[in-house]
Every structure is written in structure tokens, then in C-alpha cells.
Length: 313
Image (cartoon, rainbow, N blue to C red):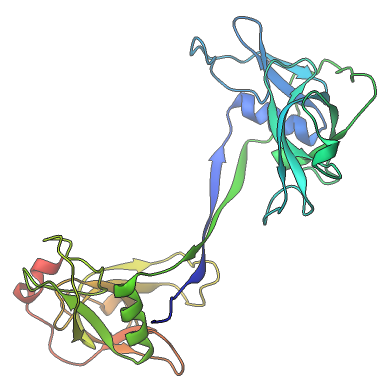
């Protein structure tokens, strides 16, 4: 059997958002070890707070402090904590209704095992040592058998309020290509670029998908294309990507390889970024030991006529 390819991949980016008055007060309060909720039109206190009444859709602004102690309403045990979770040892995810609140807050409970967790148990906030105005200012909850804490009645006004946050978003997953893309990847390791031809419309697709996107029929006939091609469209990148050792500005382009009926994308090098143009003839450049082209560079040929690649824009 052919080798089954797989690789760990991660999609990660920082999500920056501004805060309205309610969320600003809530996160600033956490920084100051104060838990704030918001009171609805019918008198309920919501924690975490929202900016609009879920029943009437009216804007709500009346902030009220609740206690840092509360009751577990439901829970689930986490046997294997993942990267970025509140604790690095097994813990329980819990919904906690804080004293004075009418809704529950999701967070982690530090407990020795699932046998020590139950619905109805009493808990309290364990504050993080370094607090910055984020939900992580609550390090976790911990079991508590004392009296309910009494809030001081904070009104939600702070001198140095948090006005915005940057929340990292990350998705880790394992990717396994199918037969067509596995063949494509194996060919790249041999410094060949291989597509597949549709048996119906006879178009050659690179990278291959295993089926023709136009006709919907399976593809299996291998066709070697390139390594030269034509720049169809391009963009100039001016923002440096994390963990990518390429100086900006640089050009990323769609390239119609000779013999292919679909343009693939790649970086253009060996030419000043402001001299890259539609129709530029380029060829693949491989680095020693590389499993795929590092970039594409000009071949020195005359530019391709627009009519030869206009259908691939």
C-alpha cells in the first residue's frame, strides 16, 4: 500500500476587538478582583454580562457586583488539557452560578479528580497573580466550604478602564491528503510538478483534486506540467507573517504552469517587487533538500500574450 501522508497543521491569528462600556467594565473589574454582572429589565443579573437584554433586545448598562463564590450547576472532566487551557493538569470544566447572579459562568475547576466534583458543590474564584483585564484573570475556581462572600457593591466605574483586547485564535489539526494530492506531493519531492487530466473536458488541474471541478468526474491520468509558467495575477505583500523568514515587500502570484488549465500560487523572487507584472514568464526554483519549490523566478523569455492566459485569471 502507498504511504499514508499526514502532517500536524495550525491556523493561528490574533483577534483584536474594541470593548463597549459593559465588557470594558467586566474585564477591568477582573483586573481589580471584582466580578461584575449586568441587570436586565426584569431584574435578573447576568454573569458574564451582555450589552443587550436577551428577552427584549433593549440596551442594558446597569452594572452590579456579584460575589467571587458560587455553586457548580454542571461539569465535565477534562482528562487531557490542551495547549492554552487554564490548567496543565487534569481539571473539570464547570458552569458556576456566582452568588448574586442568575446565570452561570464557564471556567475551570482545580480538583484532584472527577470523584471530587459534583453538581451543587461550592467553589470560589482563584485569582491570577498577574492580572491584565482578561477572563484569564480568573486563574480557575477551587472548592470552597466557607460562607458566601459579600460583594462591596462596586458601581463599575474605573479610572483606567480596559478599552480593547487581543485574543489569540488557534486551530490545531492533522491533515491527511487523499490519493491525488499524495501523488502530487510525492512528485514534488522528486522535483516534478504533476497534475491530473479530466477524461471528459481534458483539462489538466494542478494541484489535482481527484475529480474535475467542472465535470464532476474522477481523474486519474497523470500529466507532468511546468516547470515554467506565466504570472496571471499577483499581489504585493507588505505585512510580515509570523514565523516566515521573508523580508517585505514581496510578491505572491497566481502562476499558470505550461500544460496546466488551473493557476496555482507561489512567491516570485529574483526580481524587484515593483517589476513583477501580468504575463511575466517564470520558472520554479528548488532549494537543496526542499520538497517543494521555494519560489518562482523570471526565465528571461518575452512576456506571454494576454490571450494565452486570460481564461486562467
